[in-house]
Image (tube, rainbow, N blue to C red):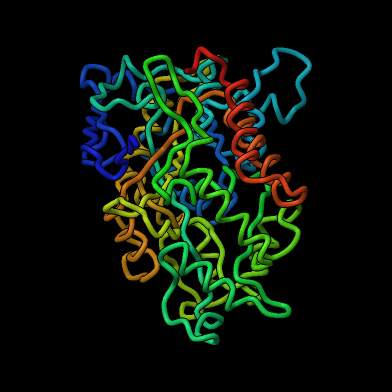
Amino acid sequence: MKKVKLKIFDILLIAAVSMCVVLTVFVKFKPDIVQEMMAPAHDRLVVAHFWQDDAVKNIFYTFAEEFQKQNPDIFIEFRDYSYTDMQDMLLSPFPEENADKKLKNFASSDIFIFDPRWLSEMIRDNKLEPLTEYIQTTEDNPANEWAVPLTASIELLFYNIDVLRAVGFERPPKNWTEFKKYAEVLSSPGRYGWTLSLESDGYPEIYPWIWAAGAVMLERSGNGSGPVFNNEIVVKTLNFINTLHKDGVITPNISTKTKKQKFNEFISGKAGMMIASVEDIESIRQRLGDTSFGVSTVPYPDDFSGIHPVFGVRNAYAGVRSGSLYKNEARAFITYLAGHSPRLAGAAHILPGNGNTPASLKNNAFYTKVCDMYESSDQVQEFIGVPHVNMLDDVVRDALIAMFENGQIPEETARTIQARWENLLGTVQR
C-alpha cells in the first residue's frame, strides 16, 4: 500500500511574510514576483469558505484586519457556506447566465477555501488559477500547483468513559476483537455499543475503518487512479461491520440518521462509541466536559501488520479563482493565510498543515493527544485529483444501505461498489 506521509512537511519560505511555516508541501515564493503580488487592488477580495464555526469566522475577521493594515487598499470579505453547498457549487460548472443570486455571488469569489477532494472538477472547469508561475514545488502532490494547504483533520474513535467504566472497561478498544467485545458488553436494553451515520457530509464513515485496516480503495498508476474496492482487506472490513450490525450492537436507523442525531446518541450515553473528526472534540467537550469521554485511534484488525496506526486525512486548501480580477492580491492573501495556518487551526480546533499542536491548544490534553497520535501514525490521502468523488461516495452509501437494510452480503457489496466505481472513473483512469 502506498501511503502518503502528510505529516512530513518541508518549509514554506514566503518572501512576503517574514516567517517559516511547515506545510503539507514544500513551496517557495519566487522573490521577483513578491512586489507584484502585493500591488494594491483598490477593491475587495471575496473569500468563500465552508466553516460555520463562530470562532473561525472571528479569526478570519482578525486576519482581514491585520492584512488590511499592511495593505490599506485591499478590503477582505469572507462569505461562509455549508460544506455541502460548496461541494455542489464547486463540482458543477458555473453558469454564465440565469444563475440565482447565491450562485452568482459564490462564482464571483476571488479565493476559495476548499476540500482538495474536489480539485479534479475544479481544474476541469477552469475554476482555479495555476500557481506554478509563483510557486516552486518539490513533492509529488496534484494540489501543489493549484492551492496552498491550511489545515488537516483526522477521524478518531470517541468513547464515553463513564459508559465504558460502568461495564468494567478502563481503556478504549484497540483492535477489532476488543471493539466487538466492548460493543457487545455495552449493548443492553436502551443502549448500544456503537452509533453510525451515513449522512452525506464528507466521505462515508466506512473509509476510516478501511484505512485503519491498512487498505486502500484506489490504486494509482501513470494513467490515473483505478478502483480496488473489492480487495481482501476491504471485504474483511465490510464483513466485520456487517457482523456488528447483525449482532444488534449498532444503534438503529443507520441510513437515515443525521450527524447531529449520532452525536446526541453518544452524548446521552445511548451509544458508548462513535467515529468522529478532530474538529468535533470541542462540541462534545461543551456537552460532556473534559473527563467523561476520550479519543483514540480507529481500531484495526487483529492481524494488522503495520508498524504505526493509519489515518485518512482531510484538508482545507486555499486557491485563487481563475476569473478573479485581483489575482496578485489574492495570491498575496492566501500566502498570508498559509503563514497563519496554526492560528486558523487553533480557532477551528483542528490541526495546522504541519500537524503540530496550535499554540492556543497546547494546554488542552485532547489536542496534545491527537497531535501525538498524528505524529506517530502513517497517513493516506486517496482522493486528491480523483474525479467524481461525491458520486463515488454516494455509490458507497447506497451499497452500505443495501447491505444493512436489504441483507446484501459484504462480498456482493464490494463487487457492486467496484463495478460502479469503474464505470464512473472509466478505463482511462486505470
